[in-house]
Length: 152
Image (tube, rainbow, N blue to C red; front, side, top):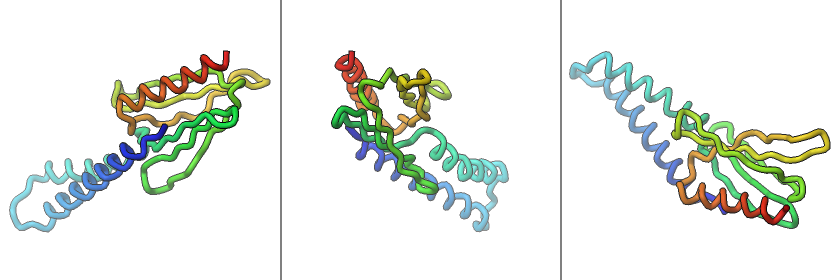
């Protein structure tokens, strides 16, 4: 399971939105028509906040597979700057459970995966699920629930 198509859509939406807001901001400074200073400040805030939200809001590409007795999750942040490709590989017998938690209401969501270790329960760093459609999130839940059921 992966969200390749949805992820590319989010990258396009972000790029177009950011470039459009930047172009509008530049136009307000270069145009000879009277433009409200409040509108310029608003556009400046949008130009700054869009990348911050996209970078920190949990927009990830995710690939999940059950291969050779391991739960394999590959993922990376869709924000183009500082992108790091990461992977989790958990033996199925040590996979404990998962949680999906929301941030800022239902606007952003993150996946937390837990593993039973010798020292106790370990929680991996959160993986953003914001770039998944609702049916992709449901598919993800089904896969992780099925792995848990077959492991018992």
